[in-house]
Amino acid sequence: MSTKTPGLRCAALIAFLACMLACGGGSNTTVNTPPPTPQTLRQAATAHGINVGAAADSQYLSDSGYATVLGSEYSQLQAENEMKFGIIHPGVSTYDFTGGDALVAFAQSHTMAVRGHTLVWHNEVPTWVTSGGYTAPQLSTILQDHITTVMQHYAGKVYGWDVVNEAFNDDGTLRDTIWYDQPGIGLAGLKTLYIEQALNWAHAADPSAKLYYNDYNAEPLDAKSDAIYAMAKDFKTRGVPLDGIGFQLHIDLTFDNPATLASLTSNFQRFAALGLELHITELDIRLQDSSSASLAAQAKLYGEIAAICVQQPSCKVFQTWGFTDKYSWIPGAFPGWGWALPFDANYQKKPAYTSILNAL
Figure 1 (cartoon, helix red, strand yellow):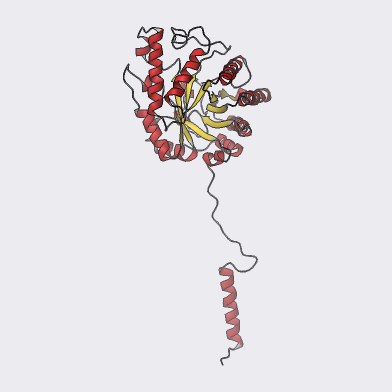
Figure 2: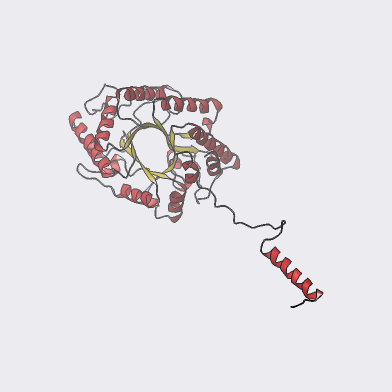
C-alpha cells in the first residue's frame, strides 16, 4: 500500500486541471475552428437548379487569373465569338473548330456545361456568303449544312444552342437579313417560317440538344417581346422544337425602376406559362464611372435581376457577357462606358459579385 503526502496530492490536482484546460475540458473553453470556405456563385446557383454562366474566349484561357475565376466561380460557359458563323465556318468547305474545341475542353476539365451561340444571325456572316451571289435555294443549302455540321461536331458536348439570334426589330417586325429576305432561304415574306425551318434543321442535326431563340431589348413587355411571345406560342402549339428563350439584358442603371422590373417579371411569367425555359444570356450593366455610388447602384440592380431569376422556376440560366472588366466588350461598343461586370480588371470581386451571391 502506497501513500502520498498532501503536497504531492495538490501538485497532482493542479496538473490534472491544467490538462483538462489544455484538452478542452471545462465549460468555459472556446474551441477555435477554421473559418468556412467562401461559397462560390456556382455553389449558390446549384441549390436553385440554375446554371450560372459567363461568355468566354479561348484566347484568354492562358491568363491564369481568367482561367482560375472562370473555372471556379461558374458552372457554365458560352463562346463569346468562337462558335459564330464567320469564325467557325470561314470558307465554303472549311470549318475551324479550334477556339470552340478549346472552350469545350476547358469546360469539361472544370465540370462546366457548354451553351452554344449562335447558328443563324445577321452579323458575323463571312464574306464568302455575303458576296457569293447565291440564290435563295443555294443559301438554304448553305445554312442547313452549317447548322448540321456545327451541331453534330458538338453533339454530346454542347447541351443547347441559340439557333436564331436577334431576328426581330424593336417594333416587332422581322429584321431584313440575308437569311430572311435578302434574298433569304426561300421563305421571304413568310414571317417566322425561316426561324421554324432553322429550328427543325437543328433538331434533326442533334435531337438531344435544347434549342433557343435569343434577343435583346425584349426583356420588358413591349412590341418586340410581344412578337417573340406570339412566335413562341405558335411554335409550342404546333410542336415546333423550341425549348426556351434567351433574354440578353445588356442594360444600364436606367433599368432599375419598379415598373421596368415588374414588367420583366411579368414577361418572364408569360413565357414560362408556355412551358419554355428562360435564360438570362448576356447580362452586363454598364456604368459611366467607377465611383462607389455607381458600383453600389450596379450591385443593387444585379441583385434584383438575380432574385427575379431565382423566384421564377423556369429561369434556368443566369449568365453574364464575360465576367471581368478586363475583357469586356462595353468600352469598345459604348465609348465612355465600362465597369459592367462582377469582377474588376484585376479579378477582384466587385459589390455586384456579392449582390449576385446573396440573391442566389
